[in-house]
Length: 249
Ligand SMILES: O=C(CO)COP(=O)(O)O
Image 1 (cartoon, rainbow, N blue to C red):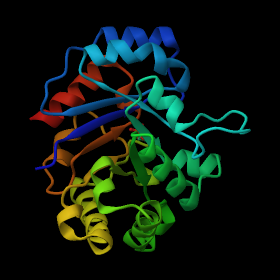
Image 2: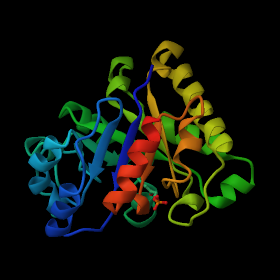
Image 3: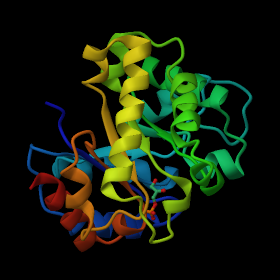
């Protein structure tokens, strides 16, 4: 039985004051769902204690693969772990599109994050032309194989995967729950080929892309979807609380 996981990806939104106010409006989260807030770097430290009090895990949105060094502007896995970060988004399509993230850097980041005991939320997804060419699973499974390269099967327990079709992000256009489930099933099949089906069955895989309180239950009712990675609808407390409730039902 895989425990549902709802993660908010705030992207480049919220000052420290706005982040603190958001958390004050949240109730204590029940145990049956893992809830994560992935905040901008500047707000992380001040959120550690308030989120802990609400039973919500702290997440970052990026990390470097080296533990230290002359890498101006970067933050290491150990630096995140030190301030109480538990999860880190790696390979989001916005980073792949605008910041030169590649399958290779995703894999390096995943391995370093795991070494620092962070849990990577590894993002994969296809663009519209790939979808229209019927190549979705080929592309997505290629991203998965690269991201998980050189990992041990045991390390899969420390990883969350987020399937986010690029054309569904911030557009209000979602994959249907059935379409998303099909791609996620194929991802699980790909992991099974690499690591064995008993391990693949344990990996939690989220859907992301225009998830909101109205459509969350449709995704959660699918056989292989274990949660959601949510952008826009994670930015207000009411909507975020509704998403968590939707995932628990
Ligand atoms: O990119 C996303 C989460 O990482 C999805 O964003 P939206 O929920 O705003 O479509």
